[in-house]
Length: 265
Length: 286
Image (cartoon, rainbow over all chains, first blue to last red; front, side, top):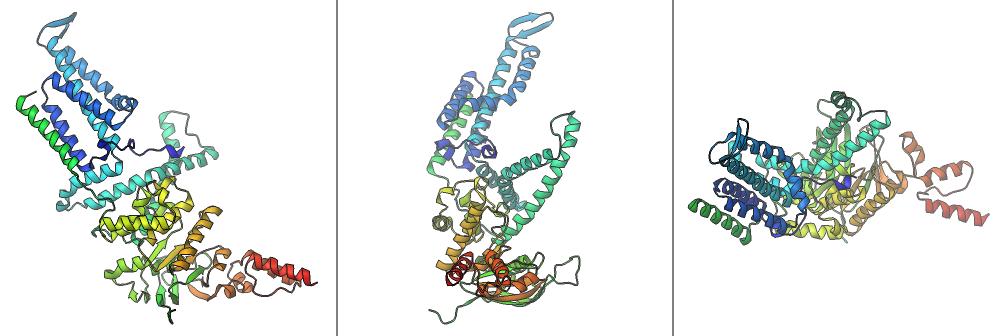
């Protein structure tokens, strides 16, 4: 059971998108998001949707992941559509129900906003599906580096994140073991109201916390024994190399942004 | 052969009090003098609370003696600036394999110590791959630690220490949480490193069989050195062991009972094999 725990939503692969440098991948994502907000025409938006779908195919990500990723925004999209359809006026009246009218301007804008939202989520999803949580953490850590000059211990924060990622499966295993132990003692995690259920979780959460603190204590000792020192300079086994391909991808996106801006596509 | 094996660890009149401990007057360790040479395999034995783990932590500079000093290759553990070198020379393996692996993959965990030394990535990779090959961990390199068995986790921890090219490995009950197969794996690995690479080992253990398999046994009791000698001598002194609440190996315990029943067995029986051989020869003679 615990073997199937996946961290984050990473899907292993060897595609070009998988191997893109995580730092640049994040930067490119930000640029693409900017690009999406600059777009003004349906044609350009459809082109970007096609591009997103093509990249999913290139990364070898099954279609089901794509749908699952879009599910959380379904209600937001629906809500936006309703608001735009019924409350934006202008253009030709398409439908009249009593005093409520649906006008062409509203339909157009609503569809545009929702389409933009979908493409935006798709691109973000692509990044989280093709990058390990650890790489993402390191990538984000890189952009936080300037905060170091403001006195924020960014390297240490990155280490904390990495250790947390390492211990998620271990603590999941432990919570399952604790749950079985408490079930054997007659605990009930299934029935009752939501408050009752929450109350019943206490005998699970308290020992889990105690054990997590004990683990943290031992881990700190082990890290110290292996020469870890806060504030000391460290190197990394896997260098964060930015290749020509990475720069190429970045350049391409920059050109696209410039084109969209220049010709207000 | 070198005439004089060089000293790796030297503890001189070491006292240790836990700061802010419950009984500040009673030391966790007192008056410890101990020297460990290159390539020695030492078992550290004693009842619970006798100070074994505390002593081990003193050797790795996780704790600093209250009085006296600990020298690792002549370097005092109390000096802040040489800490990285002390910890490189003396690597430590803990009891719980889960709580000493830091990174999300095996290879990055083995690399952790080298990363702390801020070595160039190229060299880190070379050394990690070499060490992994030595311990037969090549196939596990990209695995996350939680998918490994207990024995594998402990071998990864050993690799993480070995990659630092240590001269002494400190082990705090490394097999206590493992199944028999994992235990055998870990013990064989350490044995080989000790023999082939001349790495000294200090091994805290509650298993009489593990202690009997070493060159030298040191017994701690209530924070004091109670015995220090060849394992064949210390581990066969059953009266002494029982007096401290410790046990001998199965063969030693059985041999003692057989002697009570007036079987004329030789005094230095340590292993099951020896006991069986002696009994067989007794049977043939009578």
